[in-house]
Image (cartoon, rainbow, N blue to C red; front, side):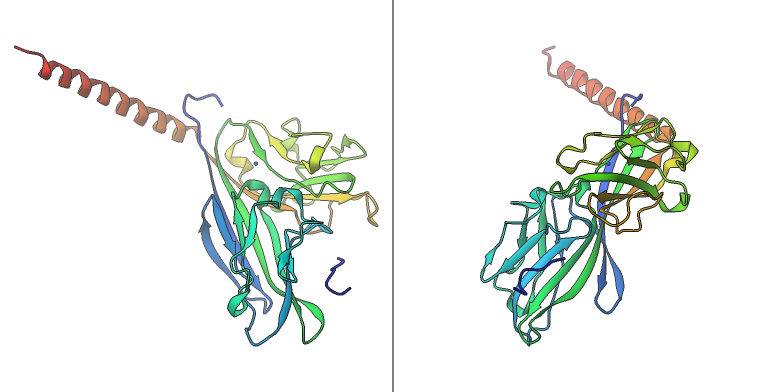
Length: 287
């Protein structure tokens, strides 16, 4: 059946801010930034010329195959092989696919949702699937120097994960963390990350391969990528997995002085409010 496709402290006030950015790559290879996306909901756009006849739409996230984000055909959603974390969180902007709108609504967006999404449509004329758009959803985390930060990454849990690699492009060929054969491989680990990184769950339960990065500094700024290798694939033992990352996270570490400034501002505001209340109470007392 052609419709069945194979296929992330020491001060009294700490900052941990985040935002989501998306980059769209259309089938004609044009790219453009859509800017900051709502923390609660984002729409991943997919539009098809409305003079075509389409019978199904599938949204997938690279690295989660054979599970998908959403599959809609024959007038209903198919949850059979839907990746568990997306259940009850995704929908089509237009279930009637009016005017060729196949856009995906993603609710309660989190760090784990960052990655590369593809929109595929089944065309009746060609009796085949066509890739319409490729969208890169990335997470930016802003932390304060000295904090421990968790970079979230979740793989499909229907396969056995044998290798996990966290990398940063500007450090290649060194990596941030490599975990294989149930142990860490320090051979090509960048020196700055030794004894500072760990997996949130070494058992990788439910596909959790999140990275814990301890005592962050401005030297940790950069874009981090999470890749996994499942049992049964062709290659296993290599320093760098040449696959699409499941998750891409940009980390921005602020100097400690920022936290101090915030703490001082809050203290001044608090003292000011206290003085205001005392003066108001004094004015209200009978003479």
